[in-house]
Length: 54
Image (cartoon, rainbow, N blue to C red; front, top):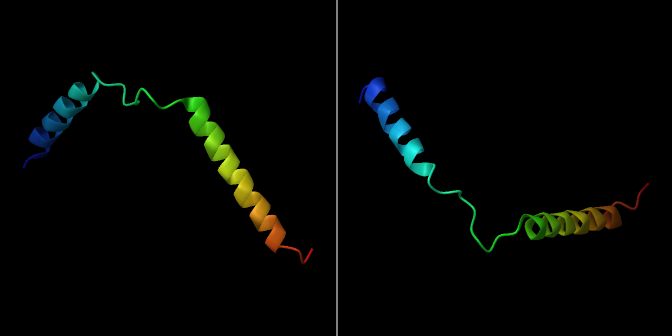
């Protein structure tokens, strides 16, 4: 494959991808972010409980 044909295929693939937003209808940014925040806070709490030597 030449560089030109590979680039042309990638451009075609990218143009087809513009039709979709990539987000599923059931995903909410607030729920996803809130869940990630809670998980990170839980991991921080667990880490601080095991680090009692300070």
